[in-house]
Structure formats: C-alpha cells, structure tokens
Amino acid sequence: LTYVEGLYPPPGGQTCEQWRAEGVVSEIPVENVLDTAPIGSFAQILAVARRGVGDYMSPGDSACKRSPLPDGKGRESFIEEVNSLKAELENGMLDIDEIQAAVQVCRLMPDRMEVMISGDIWERFEYLRLDSKGINWELRRLMPY
Image (cartoon, rainbow, N blue to C red; front, top):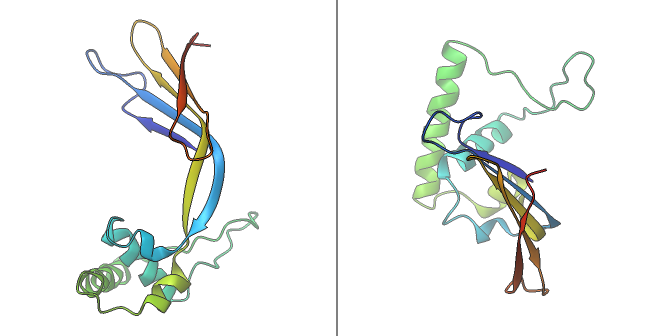
C-alpha cells in the first residue's frame, strides 16, 4: 500500500508525505465498516452493481474491468441513482445481502510501515511490528535513500 499526501515537489512552506505499508490483507465483514465508511462510496458501488456493469473490456487490455460513464442524461441519471441509494443507506433501507454482494472490504495488518516527509532532506522513518497484535512497534530513523 502506498499513500501520498500533498504536492510533489511541495510549494514553499508546505510538506509532502509518502506512506508505505507491507503486511497481510484479509477480508472482513462489510458490517464492520458501514458506520464509518463513506456512504457516497458505498452508494456509487451499489449503483454500478445494480446496473450490472463492470465487465467492460478495453481494447488490448484483458485485465480492465471498467465501464464507461455516459455523458449528458446518462451521467445525470447515474448521479440521481447514487443520491437515492445514499438516502436508502442512511435510513437503513437496504438489505445487507445486496451490500455484501456488491462490496468487498479488506483490512491491512501491516508488519512494516514507512513514512517519508519532505523538508531540507527527506525525513524517513520505519515502523516494525514487534508482536502479532500490532501493539508494540519499533521506530527507526533511516537515511533518505
């Protein structure tokens, strides 16, 4: 997993961070995140699933499973459907089976994490997990490269 925060190179007086994590990913029940995950993301995933799309293959890319979003009224219709689904989710009106069929939730349990923070030099820190529960970590400052 890699996550970048900020612009690179950062404008004067600002910083840029890059986080990396390595570890084990496991699937968890969708119910574990329904109260904290962005409702808008769930609504968009469900709207795509209801339309039965996601199997569009781009020419020359057999791994691509992305469907084009139509312009104009097709896009407007999709936005209306997403807004309706958001309201249904917020009011608990959707069946959990439909949500589970459309959404897969995973949790990363990192063994190692690293952050690089811009400045006069890249500040680089490594976190190593010392136990199976992820309670105890070793922190080391590393050379930038």
